[in-house]
Structures are given as C-alpha cells and as structure tokens.
Length: 158
Image 1 (cartoon, rainbow, N blue to C red):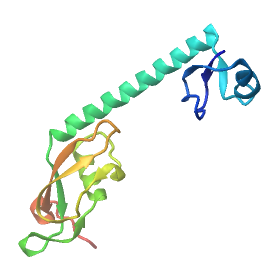
Image 2: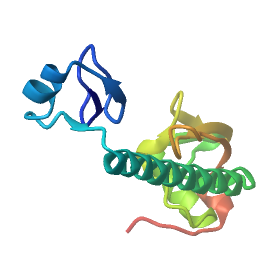
Image 3: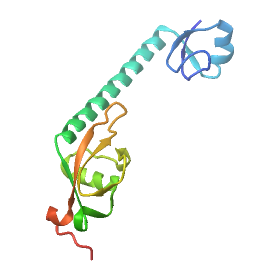
Image 4: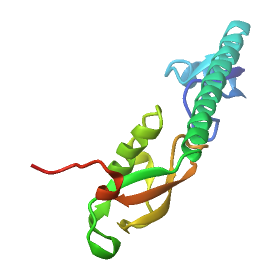
C-alpha cells in the first residue's frame, strides 16, 4: 500500500514522503496513529499543493532577504560611540548598537541576535560583521565605528 507520511517515521521516511509499506503495517500502525494518509488521488493533489505553497513561501523569504542584503551592503553603517584619546572606546560596540545604527540606514528590521561579531569591537575604525537575514542569506557589511563627538549628535547623559 502507498501512503503519505504525516510525520517522520524511523526507517520508513520523512514527513511528506510517498512510501510503499505493507498493508497490515499501514492499517494497524500508521493510519490509526495518524502518522500517514492513504495515497489517494485527492491526498496526492493536496500533498503537491502543500509542497508548492511551502516552496513559494520559501522563495519569497529568500528574495526578501536578498533585497535586504543588497540594501545593507550598499551602505557603510556608522556607529557613534563614546571614545577616549587614541581611539579607545569606553566599553565595546555591541550587536544592539549595530542593530540601532542599521535602523537609520534601512527599513528592514534587524534583530540584534542575527548579527554575528567575531570579536568585540573596542576601537574606532571599520569592521566587518555578518548578518544572518535567512539561513541561505548572510551578507557581510562594513560598519564604521566613529566617535560620538565626530558624529555631531551632541548626545549627553543627564
């Protein structure tokens, strides 16, 4: 009997797979436990439709992430920080600081957890960071760490 697996079944196949199994195994185990559906024409069409919808959604997400990557790579992101003499920072540039600076450059919301810093940034200058926009899209962008006084923001703590 041919069945469509609704869940991963060890030694049989992955969810969504069309597999041939013994009639008794299908009727006594897979079907009653709702691990599979009988492979009727209607169920096969439904499986194909579900797969197409999932593929289309995946393609849209990848396309959206690639557009964001292009926009991010087109800019050098400036991160203003407080720095002492000789360019040494008070503290370090965090992923939250970078995410905040990215908001000013792009309309794409970037979660700070998606930003990968190899080492903490502790001095003025440029650095490269990777942003995981999607499992298949992770562009490297250039950030420029500048002194807050050079940025002309005039931010003061009070």
